[in-house]
Length: 349
Image (cartoon, rainbow, N blue to C red; front, side):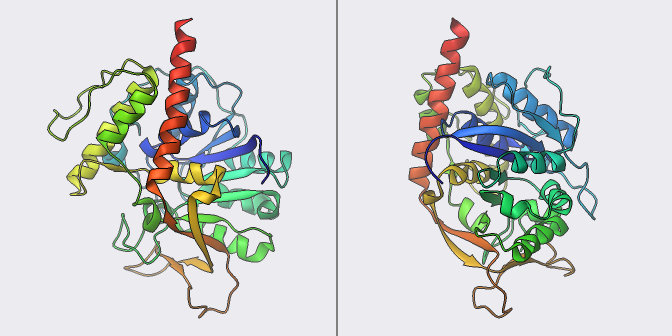
């Protein structure tokens, strides 16, 4: 894609790391955010809608429509992850109730409208279960050719799962929708393949208290470095309101990872997807046919890449296999820090 601002449509289940991804997009001068689809996943869809609207208002972003998606996956009952993201999805962060309204059309239609409005140009980002996107593909089978780029955070390729021993969360919540999305690209004849960033890639990118302090510094904000020794739920004392919300959200996420034995850190799955959507050079990818296991008693939700071409199928995905975490964090901190600092300056006027 050429330089300038790119129209971006994002489908999220906000979610701590989804929130970080949204703020990254808000602060990216090369992103023109044209819509947000809310999907049930980390929390229920109503909480996701509230979080998306509230984050827009916190960040002073106007004119971005937010659409409500499906309450449930295509087939299975909904599972949510309040233990990971907090009771409303934003960890310990508390935002005022939003005043803006949702669109009068659902998230699947929002996907289709955005793609038709920007044919061949729209960058789609999906960081939650793929329910809305699967429904959009049912409504508009030409969607793969209408999109200019699609980045999916989901799956785990030759890597352990984080929900079952073999399945990643987003795909595990709605494996049927993921299977439909991959099948749609196999059939579409689109001249570009979706970029799929699984746990094998995103778990190499971990936010730490030190990096969070760098973010506060970049925003010109006061901040107290976090520690695993802090009392649980300690509130952020950051002077910048955006940094304060992000720190309160991240503390919950740090605590979850710590309790899982992974250290006082947090994997930034979704912000990586947002960054790659705007600059694919941040990752290295390999093409492969991808499918999702739907019937296995132990393997349901597993994503399989046919690296050795046993299936005889053409590739339907570009799978992320390598990332430079330092390059990602340099960009993330620069963009979000500058955006948060600018907002604070505007609010003081």
